[in-house]
Length: 188
Image (cartoon, rainbow, N blue to C red):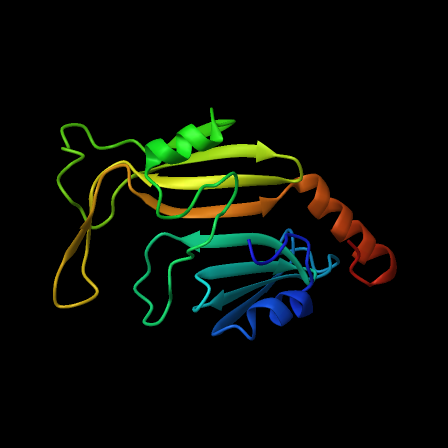
């Protein structure tokens, strides 16, 4: 990966350049408790890298890698994600490279639905692998998907990868939040 989880936004910008788009979400947890400080999450899209970066307290806590995207100019990440896996690999290749997932969550396919007949909003399954300091999530289609972003429709097959996310572990995120809370400065 070109960037490392826990990096500051400045470090990410030095490596990837300025983002093509960004979105800042501020909220309190719980929302109705005005005594709590605002929590800020920033999402940044890097089109030429195929990366969606999520920052919390100015630290990179999640890297999203869509397997396909209809944003004009958004390229699909072409590098290795982890353990030789690429976003373009098949489900079987990903499972072989990463081994047995730590957890699997699957949306229920409607009874009687043929998973090979494309639908606009297909059900997915999410596979999780826990590694030291981070979790890798891979989302696969439970049903074929019909996509149309040009004049020609496209079909993504059942079991096709839709995205991968690399997420900083809860323990690492908690340490970052606690360090920021203690002195107002983000720490590694």
